[in-house]
Length: 435
Image (tube, rainbow, N blue to C red):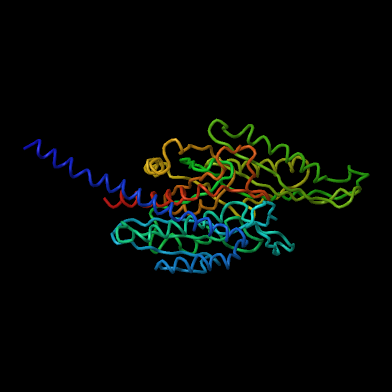
């Protein structure tokens, strides 16, 4: 009797495993069949890029397609955002999947036949417009993901929110948008999101690979403004002045000690950069004020607080020692939190990524001091942000054209892996939570 019972248990367990394997095979076949369509979408978006909060054509194409799938579609979210809801046939959690839509004020220089020729006005000047960070591929991947998951609707254990977000790259002064505004307008609620997944293609990472990092993956961003005020004087009589230029130079040098002397460099990295300095207009006039703009990048909350405090202290006290004053504004204009991948969720979903791409193609990556506003979604629900390879196989990562440059280039062969990853992360998470 005991042997019979064990046999029944063994037999009963086989269909569950086989079903999981068959679902992944089904996803893989459907993704591969969509490869030409994904590439066509991507090339169309690439040829017709639009800047943040101006993705009118782009969002229109996406909304129309999602509506054709029978999804609940809401447009005009955070200006041009599109959110679609797929309600599965079975109860379960809510998973959000996000893609960004905006291009950059960059004039394209690649030789591809679908290169952008678009020009527009940005901050008062005419600029070229280019998908120089891969958002065209992100949208196309998520559209295909929506198609595949919709085809599995009756067997879906839960609900999927497809988030197509404007303005990830930032906005002209005075405008609101991006993930922060999407969250503010309730995109992570109604229904409440239990987990959020996103991806970013990388020009320097080999196609066919996925990289990930638990914890702090991409840095928090705190732009800063420091205004140093002294006393104006004739350049020939510096003793009559309190020189804000010399004071600013002392502040800049002292700020470099934060990373080298205050940060525990064996644990995390950080960046303190002054990117602009403006003061004076003649060679023989010591000005009254100098304005500096810069950025702070940190990878955990404690370091963020420490670095901001040290910047304030160094700037104000150095100025005081020189007889000047310093007004420090942090954050200045905007702030991005740390892109923090929930470690428990990463541990849970890592086998899914390995089964999707093969263990040898899943790589633990180093943290980056670049930033992503995907972090705003991760403040509302546990999330994972993965990185998809876009470097042609056999290519040299060192020579790969960098993101945000006129020569940015992506190998399209890796797009279907992104679709498979998003589908399988969604399905496996739902299955695990619905048991």
